[in-house]
Length: 175
Image (tube, rainbow, N blue to C red; front, side, top):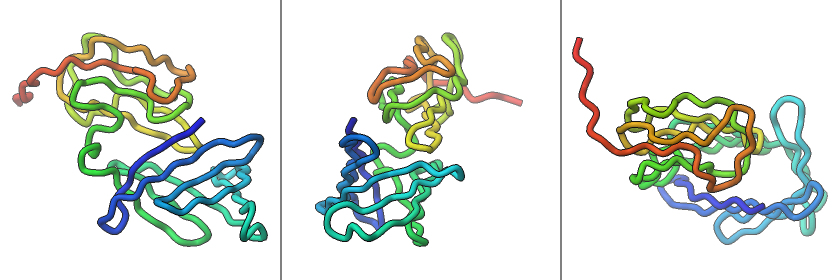
């Protein structure tokens, strides 16, 4: 399994790739820098990372939290806020075509829509748990839900189509 994402940190776009190797081993590329770790899940939601190769004597704990516009990551006592690039922001895992896809392999925790529902852009449609984090997947466009393939408790693969929203202009609600 290989997961690649782009984030904005300190105003610059940074590509991050996490690649499963075997057992508990992962290769993580942040920009041009490559690290290999042995990762062990902790009971408090963190991950203990043990460096492999150069600097192998280094171990630390990492935590992550999903935010509305990206992620907050705390590693070895330092915290970074990573935003999704502007082109992806506000649309969760959905593009302008109305298709909501799984950002990575995970388990569906919640399905908050059904076919025929009228939804607004940025409305949460599905929540997926992956890599010890909850990912709220939102509609990229306003419209009508035409198809829902996500099922609560089900496992989804990276890139899997979870919800299809037919783009439409949604009338404002009047009081």
